[in-house]
Length: 332
Ligand code: TXA
Ligand code: MG
Image (cartoon, rainbow, N blue to C red):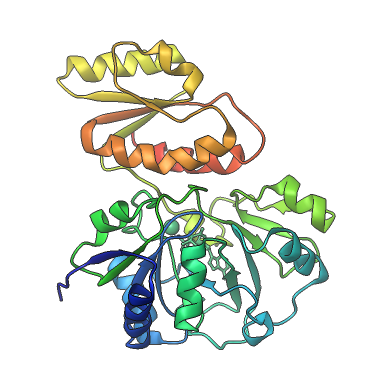
């Protein structure tokens, strides 16, 4: 059923609306410091099912549960290891999601029938105000249609869900720009399932060590979301390893009457004087922050978007590169 989609900043009034919608089993989109989330009461099968159907998300892909700062984790999960307590002290609230054995107190749809639960305490004041107002754990994936580029502004959410959700809590641009780091805390040593703004080095410094899960072809994925093509802009895409390769692709697309554009680090922008360029900035943090913004800008005007492989390494570039490869992989 179509509804009117309101985009509102956090206020007593908008939080009251959010509370009413959530308690009636509805869905509210909200700002976080990583990307916008599409939230519903994690305890309700019906509410959680609505998220999957709105997004067109495969039901085998579990959701992250979002809780307010100070929430008692033992209400939802068992066996929180000491290293995870130290990580929480160091990095929460913030862009780090941790996975524990679930107590089964949320809808089984959240965990896709699995035994573990992913929990996140976002640092965004908008998200915190929302979570405090509703007073229940909120299951929330990124607020984009399945496989589309994740949203970092309220307008992005509206572009995907206008008429389908009643409320978007607008907290401005999501500064972090890529999704949280997903960390498996069910083992002796923490294992990263999805890289993000909290890096392997940051985790190892606090936990003593940290592994990164490498999916094996054909094996059932540990983090099902990582198995899918993802973050796809609506235009065609190609990935270039050199300026020459990028220029060849740009010229070819132009000759065929298309509107090619290039996405690259700031230092490389000058290499493409006669083509539209989407600038990813200079630092790892800027690139994370700008990646989805630029993909959403480019998809509306380019017929072919060519990503030039960034030269920058370190920091959160592992997370940026993972998204870039998956957005640009396979469809040249
Ligand atoms: O920053 C974020 O994490 C954003 C904001 C909205 O909080 N949320 C987000 O959710 O990125 P989503 O659903 O787009 O991605 C969640 C990822 C998926 O790859 C999913 O497979 C994985 O986390 N995941 C969730 N629960 C899991 C579990 N119990 N075990 C393994 N992986 C899990
Ligand atoms: Mg997502």
